[in-house]
Image (cartoon, rainbow, N blue to C red):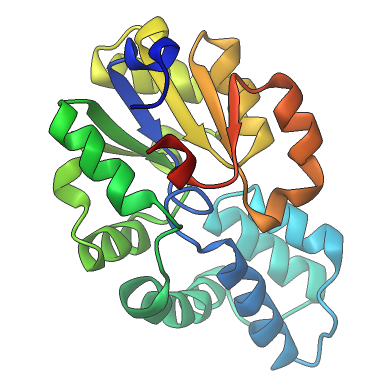
Length: 219
């Protein structure tokens, strides 16, 4: 299906945002709308980088302090969620080739899991909308592990939850930091192109075990 050196791998980890789901842009849209309503424009680049790599509670606290907002962190998160719920449940599409690739994996008997930084409610809404939740043996939320995906320990714990060995697993992921963390514990990393990380493409092609611009390449 995807080359003889990958066919021997019988467990796949999939990231959600930017890998299976074309969703990374939604958070910038939400940042622009949320901050714009409060007279803050444009959105600072360092702010976007911070909130992208931190949990929602941490990002909300940072947002309140960074812009001296009157809302509590809980109110800020609810503001984000009210915009995100509709997008994940109704509008965000899967990336090209994802349905056919997952179907091929399912028919082949590949054991699959989702490992995501996405908020659980939003992740499940997207999987439900696209009727994919039944494809995965487990959905692991790194916020419940108390770790970032750039931390190799997130993958060590995920392997333990699945009862899997690193050498039997492949990660599909758009984030260079997560790919490196997976490789650090012995998991094969397939880099997936996403516009959010376009500036890292050359770097990822250099260190990932394989790099794809679309899942259609694996069919």
